[in-house]
Structure formats: C-alpha cells, structure tokens
Length: 325
Image 1: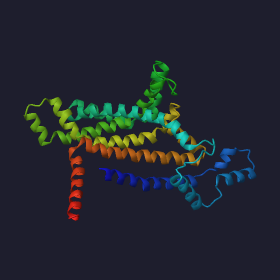
Image 2: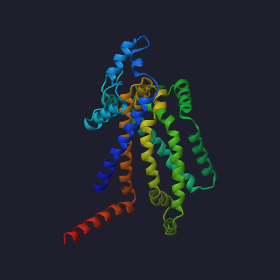
Image 3: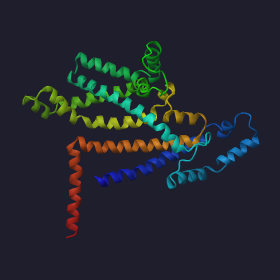
Image 4: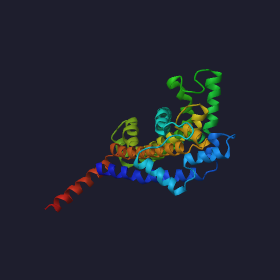
C-alpha cells in the first residue's frame, strides 16, 4: 500500500507540471495588456513600456516559462499578485477555507439526498417512486445553477427574510443558499449513479440468498446491496469534490463569497497572470489528492481491493525470499 501511495504521489508531478505549462501558455497568449489594465487608460507609452519590463513581459516566452517553472517547482514560490502586490499563497490560504466550507456543505446535501433518492428509485423500479426520482434528477441537471440561485435569493432572502442574500457575515447560515444553488447537478448525478449501481447489485445471487434466509429487506438494501454498490459512488464523490473546489465561480460571484472562484475570476478580468496560474496549480494539486484518497477509500469499502494490495505484497515478499535463497 505504501508503495502504491508513493507511486500515485510521484504521478502528481507530471500532472501538475502539465497543468502549469498549459495555464501559463494560455494566459500568455490570451488578449489583453496587463500593464494597460494595471496602470489605467491615462498611462503613457513610456510608463507602459517600463511596467512591461518590470513584469517581465518583454522576455521571450520560453525564458519566462522556464523562470516560472523554476520558481514554482524548485523554490516552491507561487509569486505575488501583479495588481495588489500580495503573496499569492497567502491569498489562497485566506480564500480557501470559505470555498472548502461551501464545497463540503454542497457535497453533504448532494450525497445526503442523492443516495437515498437513487436507492428509492432502484428498489421501486418502473413504479411511480422511480419516475418521480428520475424526473427530479433530470430537472437537477437541466436547471442552471445561476437561475436557481436568483430564485432562492428572491424567495428565502428577499420575500421571507429567513436567510442572508450574500456575504459570509452570518456564519454557516450564509452557506445554505449557495450550497442549495450549487448542489442540484451533483445531486442529480449522484441519484442516477446510485440507481444504476443498486440495480446491478440487487439482482446478484448473494442478495437473493440473503432474502431467502429471511434477512430483513432494510438490512438487505443498506448493509449488503449498498456497500457493494459504493465503488462507483465513491469515484463520483472524489471527482465531484474536486470539481466543486474549482467550479464554484458563478455561485461565489452571485452570493459575493470571497473564495477561490472569486479570486480566480477577478484575476482573469484584471489579467493578473500569477494569481490565475497559482490558483490553478493549487486546485490541480487538491484534485489529485482527492482522487488519491478515493483510491485508498476503495480498500476500506471493498475487501477484494484490500486483498489485492495484501496479495501483491505477499508475492513481493515471497520473490525476495526466493532470491535471497
């Protein structure tokens, strides 16, 4: 297991390196002059030329790319913002907790409702419960999250006054409407995936055997069927969490939440290349770690996968013992 974890961690290096090169290239060749945006429309050509020289924009692309990769991967420095002159890592650490809380609350709602909904649809296949669950899932995929966010603000914040419309000054209550707005797509996907996995499992012979032995239907579904249907659901859990970390841009903008999404979209608008690049690299690392944790969670849920790790270790030990004679 330790060797597998080390291997996966080493695979993160080319992934993050590739993301860094791609984002740096895209930001370099996208339209817009960072010097003009920073200095404003009243800046003279001499001021603009001096600013471009200060930012290193006059150097050849490959030299700039090499300097940036050396700075990030050899010195571990994401640099500082061109516009605010603030260290990028400190900005990320300041914004990350808000995005993390919002992503966790959204994920809890999505899977807390999506899994029971999918189980209900699978256990009542081709009946009205199945139809209602799948219609709800389709609506969740079809409804744009920005439209849902505006409707929730109008109803719960403006008309009823139950929840804050924006900001984070009201603690956890400030995250309820944003989480509800952002959870629908993930909830719908979770319900559909759970239904599909459960339908495959509940037709298995061991489920029929458990029922024939008189095991209560509730235990058959929740203790036997669901546990064996969790592998694809766990896969979706990890990828969904990674997407939420970097995909809350619209929700954070609508609800004025100063998180990672707001930081990156503001940097894109201001052509603040180092912030965009640093934020994207950080999110790529976070996503890779999420997928590693998902793979490790497989072994905890499915004894067959855990047995594969154990058997491969025994094979290595036996080969080493034979080699040593």
